[in-house]
Image 1 (cartoon, rainbow, N blue to C red):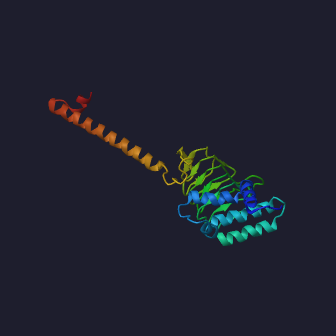
Image 2: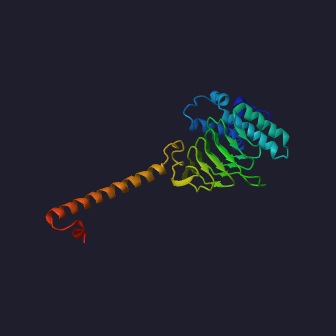
Image 3: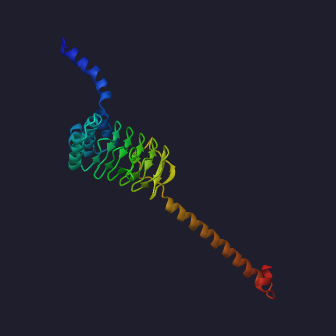
Length: 250
């Protein structure tokens, strides 16, 4: 293509960028870092110092080769990426656009796992399989999901869009969209706010504390009722000293 002027060339670049942006998820992978991480200040810093971005970029190339029935080279690339970043992503895994692996050390994503667009994954997360079944054996994570540090999601289960997985949770069953799962094994405790506040993943309900608080409140109520009953018996005894407590109660 011949450009008649620098302005013509600039116009061509500007018209090409939107198509390039749509075809290359890496642009979204970089942009989401500036949106999700307040420590990101410069594009060169992001390109050089974010192992999560490096791991995803390497995975996209390995996955492209894997889809073309190559096996050894993509696996070797994934092995090299794990050595360099501490993040292990099988070439067969499907990673959506704008996925951000924050810090990333110890993240493991299995062969048949799927991660939806714009999901946020913290360090120590495992998207693993169970047993030696052939076929789909790893989780399917929806879009805009937040997975806290150290969480383990195991088996061919589905995590709905905008769900949140608490730090350290062990998830063995499906989590509906917009819900929050915490604990070992996980429990669905409430609807989350991952749509409006994806980084507010520390504000998780403490179900154990709520149960204990409910029990303590019940004990306090029963103690108050017992105290009131004892006072009533004592006042009745003073009013009718000839009667025994048994007669008063009857």
